[in-house]
Image (cartoon, rainbow, N blue to C red; front, side):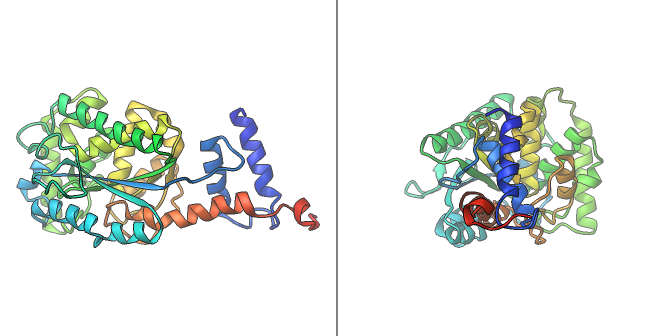
Length: 336
């Protein structure tokens, strides 16, 4: 069907379910969105999968996070051991969880379930030099694409992305600042707990970094200000769009990665369902930029992909009613 035809057919199907017009609220908008992504009147969410990309950041040496870098590898191990928030919610909702070492400054045990894809042992300290070379950035983009392509070939059509990396709200704030032209202060929040004078210091460091460089292209900007897990996630977004997948966006860092992916391909956002509004400063402005109405607003800011995992059952309900709820005609119910 053409885009116009599928939209009209989907709306007709939704409006003729046994309910008052519009009575399922945002579930109707979600059903419409998934149907449009899949170009189908009977969309399916198959093998929902969460890819969590983990990497360290040289900028963490500048004390822009209250946590030491070791927490990155420790939390990655916690993910696969089943003890983290993302582990619990994925287990609860039947989501396959895969943790990928994009650039952690640690050697994981060879028998660990963490997927090895280390481009480098973390990004560089942006206060001194660009975070990545363009070659490293391109390798991370390609790796992210490859992981998503493998999931699609295995039958997954619904995918979400999470991240783990001490200090990674800082590169995210810089990318948002650069791509949206907003002040650093607007784009930079508490992260893992920087408040008051600590937050002011973090913002001042990021201002200094922004003024130090003048990248011209999206690739150069990502390489200069990004991180290995962010670059890998950007590649994952790009490939998921090409595979026609339903893409589930999480919080601040994941949405900045989407914003970055859209600098390479503006159509990526057409496949995205925004799962929640993070409590991290800047995320509400990102959602406004995309004209998004997130499924949930629970004051969460833990990252990891947790908003995706918590929101998935709502999206499943939207698809279920579209596929299984009777129409007025089927049920023999009068439609005024």
